[in-house]
Image (cartoon, rainbow, N blue to C red; front, side, top):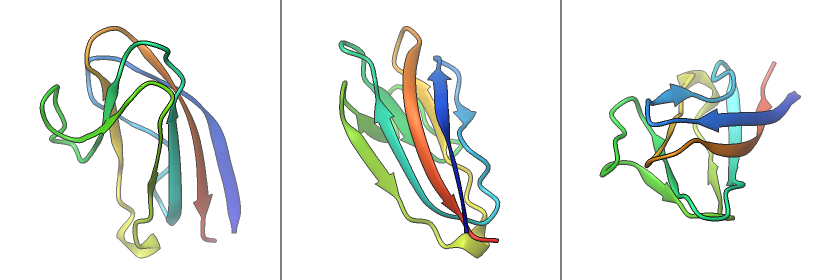
Length: 89
């Protein structure tokens, strides 16, 4: 297994986070103090997806062989997200 971590800037356009291929675990932390964001599949929007409040952390545990892409977006201004994922080899 390997670990991939870093920072992602979420804007008002959905974009993927991390590598997805072989992912067993993904943790996202909203580092904003005043702006929430969303995470989910490619259909996320300002009204659809998992809400991540300022300072909140959410975890995703997809099946590694599904290679599930997780998308993030802000609800208005850019938001920094810290991410940590575990990838099976």
